[in-house]
Image (tube, rainbow, N blue to C red; front, side, top):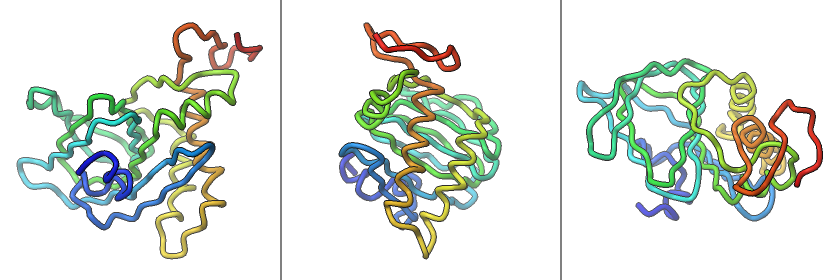
Length: 199
C-alpha cells in the first residue's frame, strides 16, 4: 500500500484492520489530519508486526488502554519490550517510516499529522514550531482529553467535520506548542516564556 492509499484508507490496514473506524478532518488550510480507532486482538506468541510507510508526516498514537510493544530497528532486530500506559502517547517522525511489534492487544487512536498541516498551525502561533520531538509513552493529560473528545467521531452517530475541526486544530496546536521547535533561522520564545513577537 502506498502512502497516498494509506492516507485514504486510514492507518488501520497497517495494524491488520481493513475496516477500522476512521475520520479525516481539515483543521486549517488544505492538509487533512487522518485518524483511526485501532482495536487489535491478542497477538500470537511471536507478536504482531506493524510497519508504517515513510511519508512527510508524524504518527501519533493515543493509548486508550495499557499495552506492550517493541520497536523494530531498520536491520529487523527488535528493541526491548516497553509498557505504554493508558492515557499515554507516542509521537514518531515518519521521515524514514517506522515499525513495531505488538506483544499485547492494542486499543488506541492512531493519527497521521502531515508536516505541512503542522507548519500551517505553527505559523499562527508565537511559540513552538512544526519540527516535533518524538515521544515514547509520555503521559499527557491534554492529549488524553483530546483523545476522548475524538472518540465520538468513530461511532455510528459521528459528528460532522465542522464539529471535529476545532478538536483536530487543538490537537495540532498542542503538539506545536508543547513539543515543537521552529525551523533553523526562526527565533520564537519557548512555551511558557511569556510570549513576545516572532523574529
